[in-house]
Each structure stands twice: as C-alpha cells, then as structure tokens.
Length: 78
Image 1 (cartoon, rainbow, N blue to C red):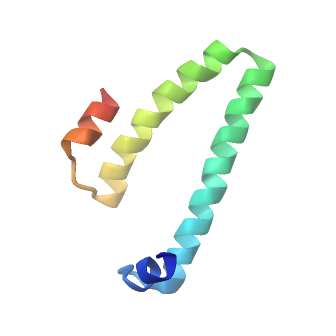
Image 2 (tube, one colour):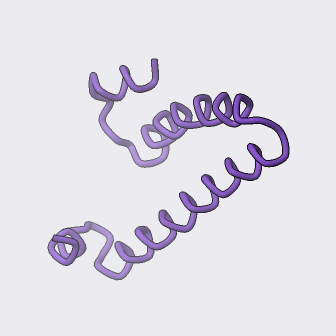
C-alpha cells in the first residue's frame, strides 16, 4: 500500500519518502519532548501541553497543506 501511495504522490515518489521520514522524526521528537516535560515538571503540565498542541497541528495542516476542513477536523479542534 505504501508503494502505491508513493507512486500516486503528486510531487514525486522520492519526496513522498522524504516526507514520511521527516514526519516520523518530528513525531518522535514531539513525544520525546513530552516525556521530558513529564520528567522535569509533571504529568498534568504535559497533558495540558499536548492538549494545546494537537489542535494547533490540525490548524497548521489546513494553513500549510491546504487540507479541506471537514466536520471531523472541527470536532477534533473543539
């Protein structure tokens, strides 16, 4: 399924794998940072931080990737 999706990716197959790789790295850094926040402060603060950042990711994806806003996206943000 990944090969088929990569071939259908508009900017090209090579860029698809670059995007997937960097997405994995960024998500790992995000959760490693969350664990660092838990270690140095508290679980409550980390939960608040994650709760604020996840809707921000939805909004940024609409701005930068020009994704269509669907009902599910609005519910996730709210």
